[in-house]
Length: 361
Image 1 (cartoon, helix red, strand yellow):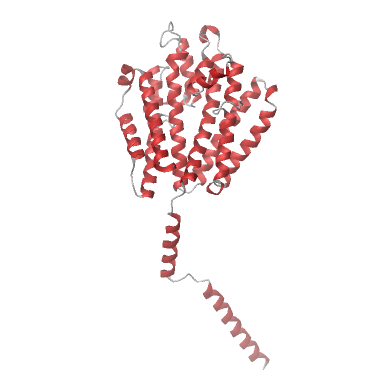
Image 2 (cartoon, rainbow, N blue to C red):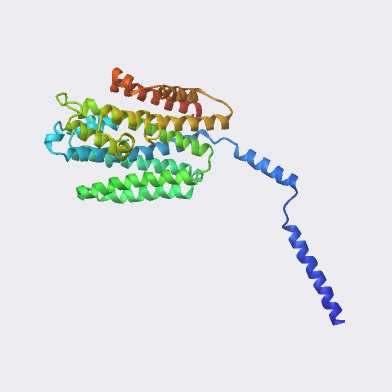
């Protein structure tokens, strides 16, 4: 009797185990298909224009802060050269022009010198484009779209903001080395944020708007660096290709982390037309104008497919990219580097306006 009862209990237990196992079996294929279709349809809803606007400008502010840190480093490097090389004392005027802050600085009535320009571009609250304000504006935009960011992206921005506030409080006692550490901190913050976005974001509207903002800002910054070279840095009496020319082009290449890339690509001494070629027409150079526009076109095309239509922004981006693809350095220098860059900046600004009209309002 005892053995029979045990056998019955074993049979019932096996039945229960089988029932539990059946409950964990995959759902019928029709149910799986319906779930996938329903959930994918949910993810295809387009984000609000305000969210897209926040992500777009968040990326631009982070890229702008990085550029300012690099431009200040380049100007400090030039200012430290012996006068036989540095000559014109226009390094700090050039960094104001390349950052688009010359008019705003002029309104302060301050003298253009190292201390005043660095303060204006780093921690000035009155300068909307200072590093301090760029990081604060980036955090404000990030808070508005916190759920659209990954943990890594939010921590990069929020941590940078808190660290910057601590640095701001003690900046009066900054030495040259401490300023260098601050600039390095800004560059590292941008790299951490950008790496977090690239490695952790879903490839959807949020990612595409963020990348478009980054590359529009990067293209603008590269163009502005090129534009100030002959009109501010190089004195009229200096010979193109001379020692001053060499050191200034080297500083500009270092400002965009392209000094090593230049020698890898060309394997020759510093030549202005080759530097311009690298920063304008070489697609393998991440900060070149053509590389930026290749990425802009690709990400705008993703947005067009997601939204079901092409628009003026896509046409403008492809037009600029097409011009860069057929361009050569002979025609750039024949027509004037300044004239080319000014035209590019105008076209780039037009693209930014079209993106705002098409998606962000």
